[in-house]
Image (cartoon, rainbow, N blue to C red; front, side, top):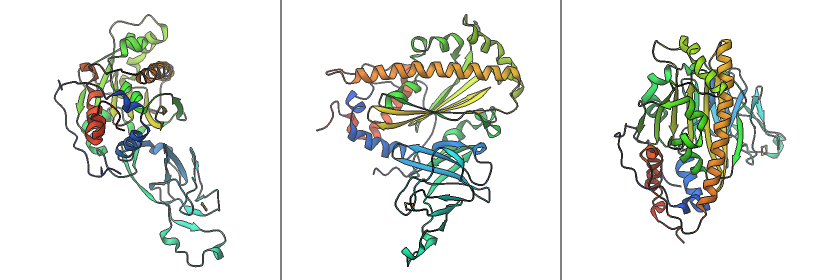
Length: 387
Ligand code: FES
């Protein structure tokens, strides 16, 4: 496994970084490369797994599934939130699915070993089968966990850019949305897209496709000039409502209602959508009426799991609720459009003889992401797949 356990530097990049070419297409079709990508990027990154509002009572748990790995995050009797590998120490049985409350213990569904919700091993069935067992060393295996403004992050191998260097770099902007006050909203949704995970992530990071790919979004909002791209795989930007109202009723209605969220912000600071992209796979979206986490996880070389989680600011007025409903409808529409777009690209990248064209300046985040891949996995510099 590549050694990525040291932290990654995060600093603002110059505005006009040179933009070159995308990765060669074989990198979207290689099983062997996918293994390297998973180890280099996913096992060595901080992944948002949920929010403290999911874990208010002892025994409350959530899980985060990442391809072949799974993490369970549990609230202990002492109200401390801890993360563990979601497998039994006896013979690797997956312990918990989804979210819920496990009471005072997690019981393995295979042979019934039980673990306290602080991870320690409580009991072993048929103890006479284990004459020399030392229960004190057989608790669930701990996973690194950090809580930032209520968001819960876990990291399987401990590498990658630190949360305090990424989100922390724009904490003033994030704090305007008061994320630590969020409440549970809908259950996360899961979709399988027939594409390589990088296509879904390339697409998320660039706005160049919005005018054609997302005409509704383009009618409603425009990107402001306030965004910053950082090294270390992190960038953010804002969308503001267009002066010109959309002719589509629900789009126009959202534009008209956005002033109803002004009470949540200092004067002149509201009415915007804050969107963060955190390599390798997290779109973090703060709306005045909603929080959305968009995550992509590989399931195979051309299958990607898209997980969308939503949280709500507290005490919404009827107008804010209406905005939230419209926003969810828009998000669904945009997701469907993105799915169609990236699945069509996946069909394209298998074409024999194709060579990638130049990336646009508005695709600089894609270029920065691909440069990170080239740096971490040098074989991706080759124009053809190695034998
Ligand atoms: Fe869990 Fe055997 S695998 S008790």
